Image 1 (tube, helix red, strand yellow):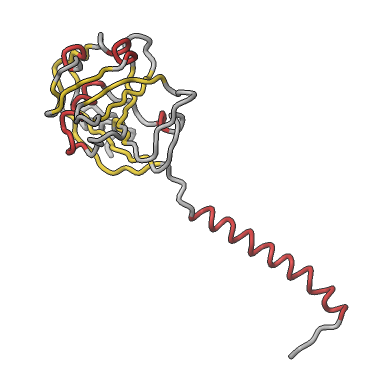
Image 2 (cartoon, rainbow, N blue to C red):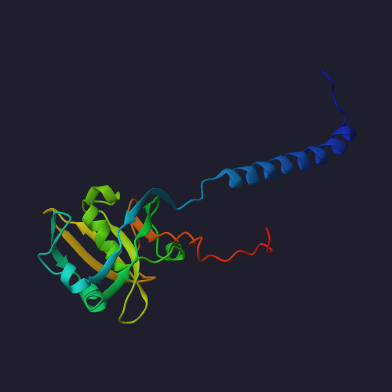
Length: 205
């Protein structure tokens, strides 16, 4: 076994320390790069049908049947901001269905495109086929209010009697977070129409 004199230790120890430090930093960055930093997972994509017109007051009244379930409760904020909403010529749209991996606020989610209330209704009509929750857990989407023209979180769930409840919350809300496992619905950008899309390619290519 090789032994080192005291002067040799003094020469080698700084190199060993530098090497260990470099390895530690390499391990740190490798761990950071490989860490799963996603906050939510896209679990499904659904297709919401288009409509010539959608009158919120007719579709979201107490006692209305949506997807085979009775609507038993409509929150004050929802009534105030969406009862007067009328959407015309609503196009069909694809919606991404996200599952929240962690409890989180609105800030990170507001980057996703807003939805239309008609499409929220369509999701509720689909029931389990929408990949949304049909129990007490939250489903939500961001919809623009015709009253203040701001985004609101429209949220819906099924109560213990098996009936729908729906409400709306201002966003970003300072005191409310969405629980882990909530289902978030966001509109997916429409694909460009090849007949109307402009090409940046030079003429002749």
